[in-house]
Image 1: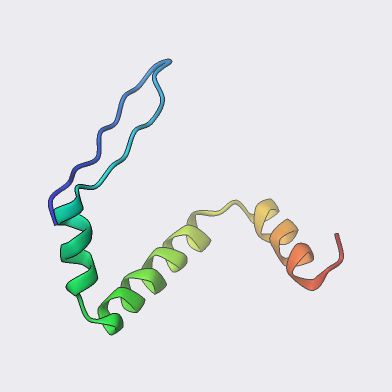
Image 2 (image 1 turned 45 degrees about the vertical axis):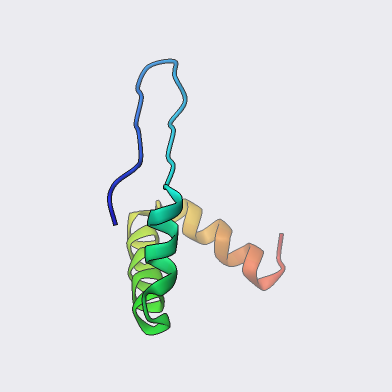
Length: 65
């Protein structure tokens, strides 16, 4: 896939987009590959998440908040 994203700094919002061709290319990829990518993303975000946020998330998951 090509990187169709655009990042602006300052007061401008963060913009990110993909072309129809990018989306079609992604849809042609095997499900197993997409699931591996999703798992890698979830692990990255979990590892990058502050400990306090992890505790709050776990309380929400257990229904304690």
